[in-house]
Amino acid sequence: MARIVFTANIQRHVACPEAEAAGRTVREVLENVFAENPQARGYVLDDQAALRKHMAIFVDGQIVRDRARLTDAVSETSRIYVIQALSGG
Amino acid sequence: MSDTLLISTRKGLFTVSRKAGQWEITGADFLGDNVSITLIDRRDGRHYAALDHGHFGVKLHRSTATGWEEIAAPTYPPKPDGYEEYDMWSRPLNWSTARIWALEAGGPDEPGVIWSGTLPGGLFRSTDRGQSWEMIRALWDHPKRKQWMGGGADLPGLHSICVDPRNSRRVWIAVSTGGIWFTEDAGASWAQRGEGMRAEHVPPELTHDPIAQDVHCLAQCRAAPYRMWVQHHNGIFVSSDEGKTFSEINGVEPSTFGFPVVVHPREPDTAWFVPEIKDEKRIPPDGKLIVTRTRDGGKSFDILTKGLPQSHAYDVVYRHALALDEAGDRLAFGSTTGGLWVSEDQGDSWACVTHTLPPIYSARFA
Image (cartoon, rainbow over all chains, first blue to last red; front, side, top):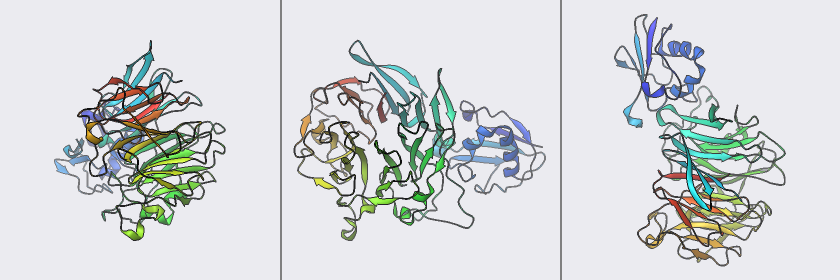
């Protein structure tokens, strides 16, 4: 299963511990995480379920390009980082 | 009279209380967070605070017996597959709450009803004290809604909500920019209001079009709901027929430009404003922070200065940052430079509570 790590700054709003989740795409992995932690969903995704404007996701060091549908591929050994883009600071 | 104020700022929510005749900061919540607006629901005493976490989006919190709890924030419905619309900059318009810019309680006959206005223009209604929200589709789907534009912000913003004190199903809202809209069936259908307002900054064929009006703030007299006051991008307007038609108030010194307006709850002819030079110079005239007050429906205005800085003051007062208490005697306003002033005599004199708060977005009396 992929390993997913959330920015430290989200933790004071909603606990998002490092987790392992199944999925072949970023969307599938995130949905599996949010199924266990529904409050976190709105902190990462906007009303249309796209990645929030000033958030970024990296999969194995590569920034996710499909911010709307989150179709970027994930492998069993992927490490996913959900972080803040500095643009929104 | 109210002894408590909630002050929403760029960096937290501050409680200001009157103790032994003095106003002082007695509480700080959400320190470091952007609090766009608050609501004090006088029907049940609950407080609501809208936060904008930037990266993490817009959230809503409600007071509990011991603190705050996060509740649902207004959320836009899914955009239909294949549908796209564009904002005035030709960018795809994201159907997503960009800011909560208005929070108002429903009528006394509908406990738990809360209205919320947002950027990019959606109006929402909750019937369960914010546990869940329903977008008012009839307004969002109104074909003319797409003519709304940004005003101050890039996106259209719904900033004023007036619930008719005689009939809670009748509601007026105002949009910057998009003019005034009215429903008499709790949001099921909407009609444009606001004939008579005038926009100088648009092409002449649009000058008097009600949808082109940049209403900065809309206020309604509770005891005389026919009376509505508008602080407009272009000046001050007053209506005596529930917002159907407005008359412009001219010749007010030092200026008719500004953002907020409040009206006395029982005296429809009495209203307060905080003027700035003009849209292209958004600072107090001559560096003097003043409040203007009319007691005769706009025929004449008092210039109120006692206790306010009269030299090199560059405080700007946003549209929600001027408050009047339920009794109609106490006023408070906060500024973009963190100044907060309170008056206990309808503005005749003012006391500075602090001038070191973060930029102030909203002031509300409990």
